[in-house]
Image 1 (tube, rainbow, N blue to C red):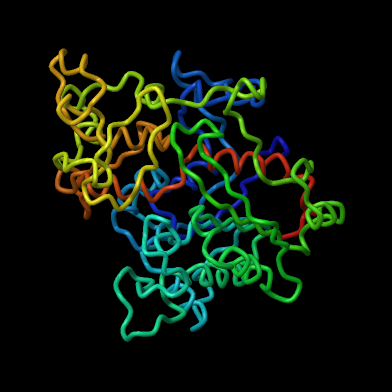
Image 2: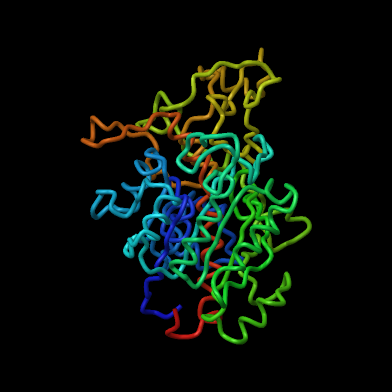
Length: 424
């Protein structure tokens, strides 16, 4: 990138509360231990204190965001639209309705942009769900479809509507992400790649999608996401086009970031995985905290080991995958001895059995503490309040911001080599 810091415009689809958007823009606090200075010394230039550093700000800027969830908007707007705080950058209409409006003559529906990112809904591909895939009976607006037959507007086909937006805007790059489970569901991965490749006459060069493990990038959580990346062929340099067409794992043109954390005995350039205990540094107990997100946690009781979410987090290990749909059964911060808990010394200090707080889930996902997830509308003169259920849901639906930052930084490094100058 040049020193002028030219803004690179990003359209964000299925934005949720903005995990991908935050990662692309940078300039947020992460644990020092989450940054590997051997591989990224430039990321530790802004220390906050002995535990935290502030990641660099990038040239990427979200100019348009969309999600059907009012809770997602309530969390997104105060962080990303601080100047106006009026929600003008965030649309709560579905992608289907936005595309239909454009096709009906709404030429200003989508702004011009360099990148489109989107985490199209994953429930229909997740191994934790019913795995209906493309045959989902859920509709694009969140309800159910009318009739027995799935349509092109079902939740499992929403990537095709993202494809439509890419075809309308024609950005230099698009990035789509989903759960790893998608890769084991028949030929879903291959079908999606081919559908994106067929955009327009000259089309997009879509490289083989790759599964990234969040824990390999300083995220204290076992979370795996499949990343699809496509490049506008006519905008690429001749050399970039050649390399991307024959892309190899160690290619200098690979857009996938290099892992920074892992098994240090096997690779000395890596840092150890980040633990739950690392993530919870300096957090006070809910009763002693002023942070609404830390004070908020599910009061669902322990139902027995046969149910999901009845286990206790391992403070010395990686955190569990933070789920959006847990129905109150989010994992426990600590369990009593009767329920098989390990941290009995904490009970001796007067602490009680409880589930993970909303803030603890946000920490495991690498959201900074200044990102709000619990809001009182009446206290702030706003339209929408956010409960603990809303907070858990939008956090669980998000891409870990630090993982997204790795993807964004790698594209930032490659940008001058990828594209012809002055070419959209």
